[in-house]
Image (cartoon, rainbow, N blue to C red; front, side, top):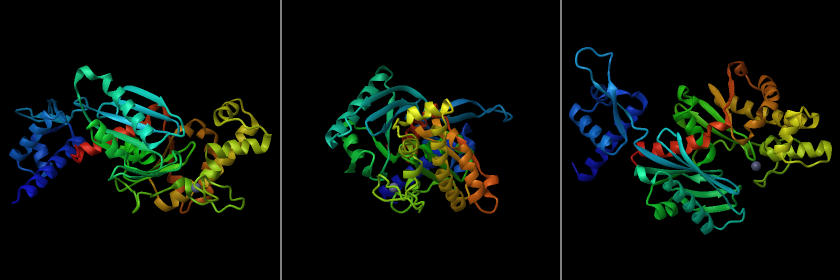
Length: 387
Ligand SMILES: [Zn+2]
């Protein structure tokens, strides 16, 4: 067998061991050998190597087994660190996390909204550098940097292809940051990162088919089908915010098209509804405060947006028949004012009684979902041995 083939097989075996420890741990070496189909000695060599790398650790003994109690293995969440970055319109949010997405420290940096590519890379590098300083003394290995961005991403090449939020195109962010830091970089669309985070560490762990919807200045959705994220053939699956509603007034969307859901149910749409009925033009935060005080116009604006959001979600339910739907994003603070309309729309627009089956659950924004999402990118990279 050629050396390259041997390396490939060894790497595949290592991936298999890591994945089984993650999904079935705590697990003994004997059970690991059984579920992976690898010999005891091969399994043992791989386990020793992964322990030395800080990826898995021993965690107590199997009390259920009779006779000599086997030592159990688990993923060593504290064995290393990941850096998570969320790139927003005028801010970079960063977090240093353990391999379970638990936050150790955070840094935020405001950006001028008209930044150049060089300024963006320098600002990202400065946030990453500050995060690395947080635990400098512990010398824990940083396995990777996960970056979530709203827009079209080639996650395999680490390239931001296009982002209307950031007004950027064709930037190989992954390579540029990796060259500067020497750490592997994993880039992903922010809603996909949220969805993967739910699948790996959140409520999605219990489901094989579900949707995650993100509300706020934009609207997006991520789809898990048969345990895996569905990306489509051009990394653009489920551009939910740009689903055409085909309604008569055809409001313009920031993507340049007309009639997109985002133009009818995002922050800016809600602000527009409020302006249309009052002549005043407050921002979304103020409209949320007004709704809390039961302001009729504010409640009505959310209700209108909720109706359109409900149309959109009904279509997703009819298409994907998910087990559950999770709703997150900055707009989660006002989802409760849209909820009745969404449920009404589901009842009216889904088929075969699917609305009775579907459970829509808002996911708390305070849970730092994006951090969990970007940490997941790194953990997935580690599990695929892209380190
Ligand atoms: Zn659009």
